[in-house]
Image (cartoon, rainbow, N blue to C red; front, side, top):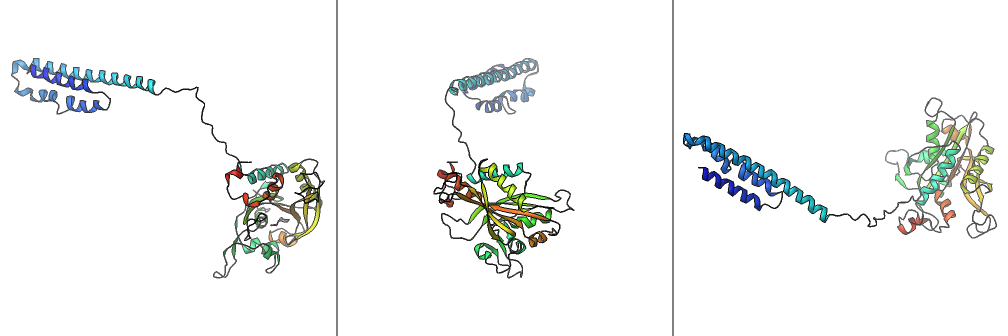
Amino acid sequence: MLEKIGEIKKTALDALAKIEGEEGLDQWKVTHLGRSSAIMDVFKNMGSVPKEERGNVGRTANQVKQALQAALDEKKEALHQAEIQRALQEEKIDITLPGYAIPRGRLHPTTQTLREIYRVFADMGFQIYRSREVETDEFNFQLLNFPPHHPAREMQDSFYVDSGEERGENPILLRTHTSPGQIRAMREFTAENPDNPPPVRIILPGMCYRYEQVSARSETQFTQVEGLAVGHDVTFSDLKGTLSDFARRMFGKNVDSRFRASHFPFTEPSAEMDIECFLCGGAGCSVCKHTGWLEILGCGMVHPNVLSNGGYDPERYSGFAFGMGPERITMLRYHIEDIRYFWANDMRFLEQF
Ligand code: DAH
């Protein structure tokens, strides 16, 4: 019996010596130390060992079992160390190698212009108000004082989402300008709303859509920044002061501006603001078409009907509004000749900003 135990030990140790990787150790443990291993059988069959030998056999078997466990632990540690050595050798990191350059992202040119506009108006106490891009005909036109067949509606050929005929209600469309947000904002800035009491002093940025023939000068989508100030005693000189100051903060402190009479259904009186051409300083160049002036925005005093539609009594309140196109401003600044570049996602264009 003792001989047999000796054999068991030898077989197990030989097998262990042949193992080359840590993966083999678990299987070895099952085979040589597990419940149905040869050494465990010795313990199970103790009953058939003559009484006088049992003590000796039991002790020897125990020693072998412990020796096998110890050999396993030792082997495990040795393999582990070998693995560490191998990794240290093979996985050396050369910290002197130059790293991979991480390409820096950039902001879309329109976003850059938008952020400058936000900064200037934020400094003047204007808050950003975001309004929806999908609007009803009522908000996009009617409440802004466009009568049903007003010619300006043709000017703004629209993308209709739903004609409204089946529901017998308002058509739904993609907003053609940011102006409908004026009504939504005025209805939210009320004396009863402790978060947003009047006066209203906001800018409304966002994407607008028009069903237009795409060309170098017109796109079906573009951003606008609308502005609205409503309160007591807001006058046209507040409008002029605010917008001239905007022009100086945005384009340069010596930049002159001028206002020309214009027409919009939602403002009365209405104007367009030009700034002195920042490329030629007013001397005349191809960008300002030799006039010395660049048209930058439309503006005016909020029409009494629009104030009422927004929930403000035109007898007690007045306001001014304006609207500008960040793509146009960006085009003038960087001498970009084709508006289609903006939303075509061509990296060659975007990487230049
Ligand atoms: N909504 C006009 C447009 O889409 C721009 C505009 C002009 C907005 C005058 C205004 C304004 O608020 O007062 O062309």
